[in-house]
Amino acid sequence: MPNLAPRKFAVPFLLATLASPLALAEDCAAPTRQQGEQVFARDCAACHSAQKDGPVMMGPNLHDVVGRAPGSVPGANYSQAMKSRQASWTAQAIGAFIEQPQAAVPGTYMPYAGLPDAGERQAVTCFLAGLK
Image (cartoon, rainbow, N blue to C red; front, side, top):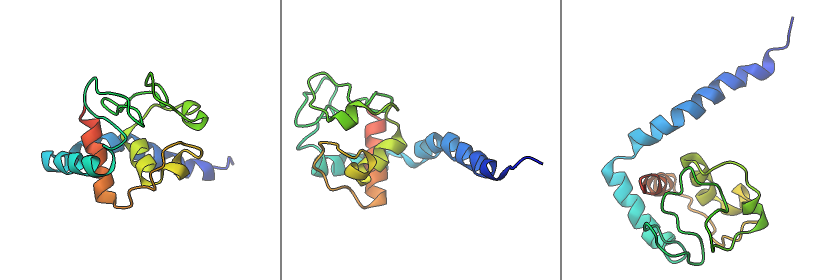
């Protein structure tokens, strides 16, 4: 009989991965995006622009970041660790990165210690995901 133990985690992981964008969409009501804009202004705007065609600052412009390849904004100074990431930015990856940048991408140049509040991370993620 084949060993099915490794597979018992595959289905829940797959379902969680597929459901995550739906959960994000449901959690991204206008007040959440507005809170995210406020948290972004407080914690991120000193180093990042989020306006369409905004400048590269200390960090890359984050307008339309969801779906973008890491380390791909022309003129931004990226660490080798960020340039070598393969997966495009998803809302979930952004949330993990802003929670603990150095843990999510060891060697990143981002000097931010992280955003510990899960609600604020969700709000910032919703704000960024809505910038198209």
